[in-house]
Amino acid sequence: MRYNIEFAPIAQWIEHLPSKQVIQVRLLVGALNMVKLRQFSFPDLDRILEIEKVSFPNREAWSREYFEKLYFKYPKGFIVAENKNEIVGYTIGQPKNRVPTKRVAEIISLAVAPDWRQKGIGKALIEFLINHFRQKNIKEIFLNVRTKNKAAISFYQKLGFKILKTIKNYYKNGDDAYLMKKEI
Ligand SMILES: CC(C)(COP(=O)(O)OP(=O)(O)OC[C@H]1O[C@@H](n2cnc3c(N)ncnc32)[C@H](O)[C@@H]1OP(=O)(O)O)[C@@H](O)C(=O)NCCC(=O)NCCS
Image (cartoon, rainbow, N blue to C red; front, side, top):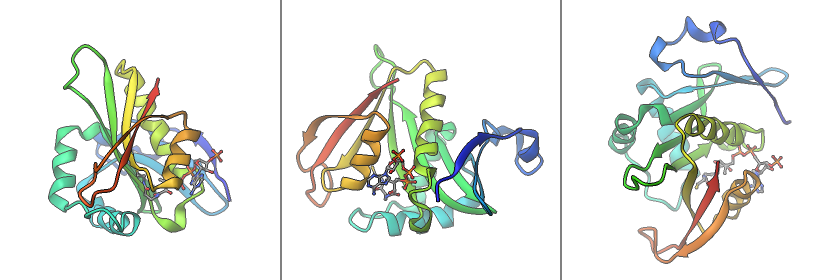
């Protein structure tokens, strides 16, 4: 089933969250489920590690410490999707400060729990980041994806990302990556 996406009154959720985390809240409304997007907080990490493990069987699973490091580098870009207190997906995006002349950002990771795929959650997470980066006056978003990961490539293409080039042996196991870009 697909979910309608609506903006919810922030006040509806604000009492549950420390105020610094409430940057924007969305609901995906289904018959019985309401999924909200919010900034990551540390109690989310166990569930994120589970989603990570099942979503990336070929990639060396990122450690707790690595997720923490990514969070501290740019907390506003670590976004989770939550249904009734259960994390069902996450994404991490960060501005790339290495390129001072161009305002660019990158999507570092994205995963939705298998039972929650094809319901619009991945799209909502990426659109959330896109809106955030637009507000930061960022003009281009980059990401790398395994050339074998046809589902993710098709997903990103539907969101307007284009393949720029192949990067040989990008991953530790020797897999190639596509570099993809979207202008925003
Ligand atoms: C890629 C992933 C995040 C997509 O999340 P999702 O919540 O299922 O995606 P959505 O439901 O938001 O789909 C958005 C669009 O992408 C399309 N899409 C999603 N999964 C797809 C698939 N497996 N094959 C083809 N298209 C797909 C949807 O049909 C939808 O298109 P529409 O807007 O025209 O209806 C999810 O499959 C996943 O977690 N995969 C494992 C981890 C991974 O590969 N991450 C990306 C690494 S770079």
